[in-house]
Length: 198
Image (cartoon, rainbow, N blue to C red; front, side, top):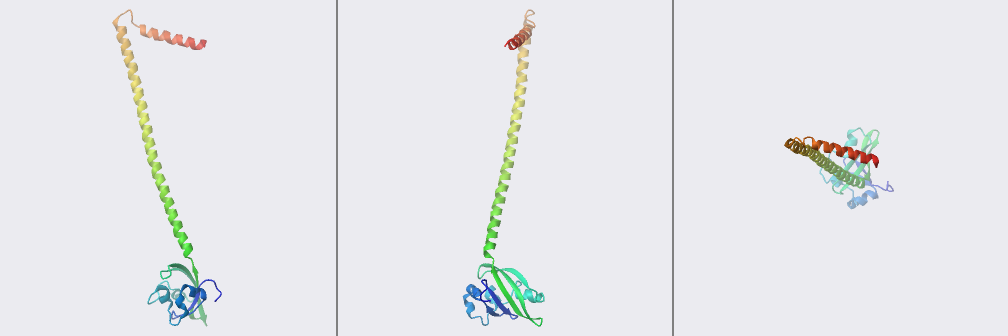
């Protein structure tokens, strides 16, 4: 067990640490003297085991091997603790705990989630901007349509004004009656002939 590169330790059913490897001692320098050290005192700085205690979990599940991720505020680390029962004649004597530091992956996961949140926020912001642009574009197109309708109304009014002026001129004298209409007809015919010749 001393050559295992990650922390490992053994506790008895009273939560006393009876063995820890050098990798575990590198986490806690005061583990050189492990006599009367309870695991929950060391890891959780508590007076009794909490609900996440691997020994309690293994004991409650008839000595089955368990794995759980825990956060230790004392180390500011996320650890995955793999707990295996130590049995003699089907009697639980204690548990062997192998510890894997997963802090880096948890921090990376948090950073990844933050990046996803930033990306999602940027996408939502772009959607809002696109929607505002679409509303602005629709308003602009509606304004152009209104201008086009206004131009058509103005053009129609202008033609009616010209016709009214022509009618007023034609009504002035019987000699000029229909003169404007004939001039426009001859001008149109001349224009067509010029287009055909060219």
